[in-house]
Image (cartoon, rainbow, N blue to C red; front, side, top):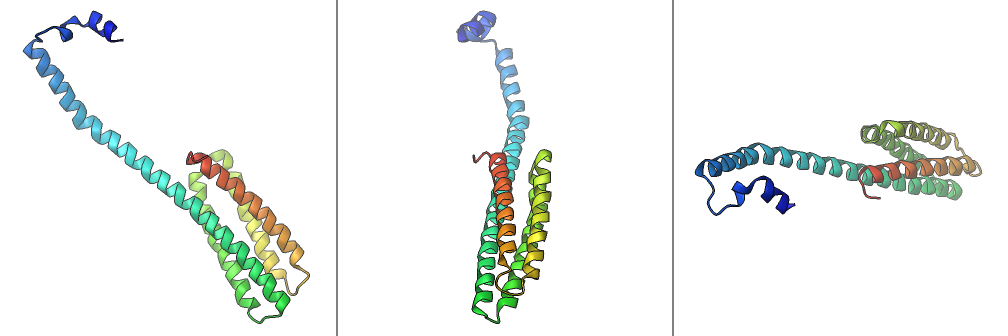
Amino acid sequence: MIDAIKNSMPLLFEESMPVWMTLVIGLIAAVGSYFLAPAINRKLEIDKQRSQHVANAIKSLNENFIELSFGIKRFVSSLSDGKKNSIEVRSACLEKISEMQWKIVDVKVILKKKDLPLAEQLGKKLNILGNNIKGIKSLGDEDKLDGSLREVSETVQSILDRLYRHARLK
């Protein structure tokens, strides 16, 4: 490649380069660094911020789901023990579902158009899970809860997989 440049522009490789060419090359380099460097830095900063946002969304969605699943286990446990705090635990689970539904709004911004139905599906499954939590009055009704939680888990895993791919972490 250097040989091709030497053959096409021999003036650049001679012992003495004309002063006008040195000035032109210096001017081109100065203008290039004045306009190009900030543009490149801006693009890198935007990419960095975008990656950080995706990483935060992944972390938050994952943490919210883990907290929800532990909350549901505490709820079922409080029902089986006959504890009076089951209403508070139920409320905490419903609050966590609300948090996850708000997180879906954030995730929709990140996901590609073809993956948006997956986020909609998660919202619907969270609604079903919330209704099942509200509908449980006593121990023995938790089968619906287990099925709903499993469906939410599968959908969350699919969304996390898409987000990992988007962030190029997988």
